[in-house]
Image 1: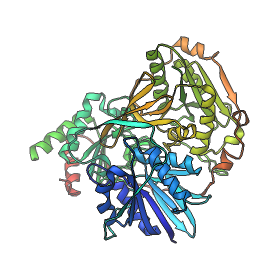
Image 2 (image 1 turned 120 degrees about the vertical axis):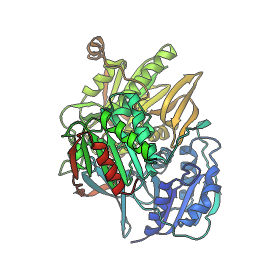
Image 3 (image 1 turned 180 degrees about the vertical axis):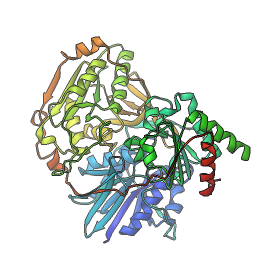
Image 4 (image 1 turned 90 degrees about the horizontal axis):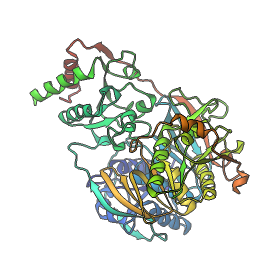
Length: 319
Length: 259
C-alpha cells in the first residue's frame, strides 16, 4: 500500500505553519515514498524548515503577486503536472484558501474532487477517502475512478501531526502561467486572546438558548477562563450574532478538543458532526430532550442564564 | 447591474436525510426548499442591484427533477426570473458537474456579477463557486462578509483564519457570501403572489450545449464503495440543575485536569 508521490497544499496559520498542513503531511508520509508540498511564495521561508521536519523534501513556491491563491497556485501546479512532474495524490485542507486552490485545479485538470474527508486509505493504486455524513452517524467511503493525480480535501484534526523528517525542505520557485484576478489590497488580523478554534484544548460554544447576541459575552468569558476558544452553532451565525469563522459544524469548523462545552445548543445534526469527536462533552440546556444530551458526558438540565454566571463567578474566584 | 445568484433547492434539513440503498445517493424526493445558505446570496444580490440604481437578479439552479418551490421563495424575495436546469441525466452530479451546468446557464444570463453561498447545507463541498469562476475564466472572491460594487469593480471583505482581507476584482466576477452577513428579507404577500407569474426558464443539458457524458452521475469518476454506521457515542451523566450545576461542571473539569 504505497503511492509514489503525494503533494500537500501547505498554508500558514498565525505566524506558524497551519496545523492542518502538518497533519496532512504526516499522513502523506504513511502513504507515499515521497512527500512534497506547494505554497504561496511569501510563506515559503516560514514554512520550509517546519514542513521539512514533518517529512517534506521539496517545497514548490508560487509567487501570487498579491492575488488570492486560487488562480496562480492552480496554474503553476497544473503546468508541473502537464510537464510530467505529477504526484499520485494532492491533499488540501478544508480551509478558505485550500478550497479555492482545490476547486481551480479540479477545473484545470478536469478531475473530480472529494472534500470534507476525515480518513484515507490506499490499496494498490486505488485511493479511497471517507466522509462523515448525517451528523457523523454514517461514514461513506468513496474510491477515485479516474487517472491520478487525485484531488482530495480533508477536515482539520483528521490525522495526528507527528514529526518524521530531518532536513529543511528545499524551496523551488515555480512560475504561475496565469495571473490571479483578485487582488488582496490589505490584510486585517483581528486580535484575539487564547488559542484558535480548531487548535484549542477547550472549546466553549453558544447557541440560540443564550437568548440574544449580548449574552454571547458569557461564552467568551468562560472560554477565556478555561484558556479555550469560543465557538458557535450555525443558528447564531446565521442570525448574525457572531461571524462565520466561529461556526462549529458540518458547514463550519470541525473541532476535537479535550473538553467541549455546549451552552444553549440543542444539538442539530448540523452541529454534532463538528464536535462529536471531542474527548469530553459538557452540555447545558434547559430542554431535557435536547439531542445534545445523547452525546454529552456531563449534561446539566438547567437555565444557561443561571448556571453560566455562577460558573464564571466560581472560576474567577479561583484564578 | 445584473446579478446571477446560484441557489440550491434541498430536502428540508429539519428532517433526517437518507441514502437510497440502491444508488447510495441522497434521497431528494418530496418537496424541496430554498437552502437557507442561499437566502444570504439572494438578499445580497437584491441589495447590490438596488444600490447600483437598476438591473435585475436572476436565480440559477440545477435539480434532477422539475422542482421549483425553492425558486419561488427567491422570486418572492424579489428576484426577477430564474433559470432551472433540470434533466434526469443530472442525478448523482458531483461538484464539478454541478459547476459545469451552472456555468453554462450563467453564460446565457449575461450578468455583471455572480453571487453564491459558500457551501450548500446538504452537500457542503464549498468548491462550486470557485469552479464556476474557473470554468468561465472569471475572477472569484470566496467567503465574503461584505461586498461593494463601484466603477466596474467589486470590493470584498473576505473571511480568513485570522481576520479578513480586503480583496478587489474587476467585473464580471464570482463572489461567494458567508451566512449571517445580511438579513434575508421575508417575502411579502405581494411578493409571493408576484412570484407565481415570474418566468422560470427550464432547460435540459442539451439546451446548454453540454454532452450527457460530460456531466451528471456518469461523469463523476468516483464510486461509493461502502456506507457504514459510525461508532455511537454514549450519553454520560445527565442531571437537573438544583442550583449546583456549576459545581458539577467544575468537578468534571477538575477530573479532566482542565482546572
